Length: 341
Image (tube, rainbow, N blue to C red; front, side, top):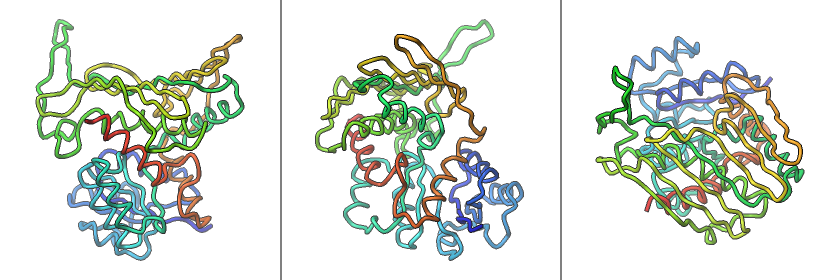
């Protein structure tokens, strides 16, 4: 059976989780990796049985490898734009870790100056491929809760507090070199976690009608900042021109969890763990309440790898719905940019 050959640049924690998804796939293989850190390179080679010839300590060498079909860019946010362009120049298909770029001007630059239409491009929002989101889409399309009118979706964990010996919470000292709190590296709660809530908002709004990027408004924005200048607790309302409203929040200071509540004209759907599906439970609240448990593989990245590989093998120029296309990423970054202001 023909398989898609994947390469990864940047071998951090997210790349390690992603690579674990290949063992479940019949249509994809992890063929090559590249890292400037030799220890990480050696660990990947050993853990995933990658041949020596396909282990590179230079990113460009992997991009030039003719046997690699698609590159997963798992580098820090600040490097995404540069390596998206390098992939385009080398005619490599692209899966870039979220957020696609640091700001809207970077992704707009790609759109204006490069022929992105002929390059397979996807932004790595892995939750979009999980069976529970596919089920949610089916439920909405089947009008189980009537017409959807609004949503509340959050992603947040208090990573800035710790408990002392007596169980009293105290603020941690911020490490300015940590990418989450470094503005130059694309830190902050919005870029790290809020991008998920925005992407889900445009996914559900698109079930009503096509989104016009010029007619999306953000209101009631609230943000708190760390001493490094990045946001650490942020909220907003997204108003779409099809009358759908999404209330979003992302935080490094509050345990907001990963829950989503989708409100319809005849009930609501609650997703217990929107982003990772652990547990994968949907609750339908209406005249008679119902709970749906979704059976799923342990590694969520398998679904993303499998879905995109099928698209590539079928000769698609962009991911099928509900994959995150370049057009979706443009809308996503436009909203994120407005939230960051």
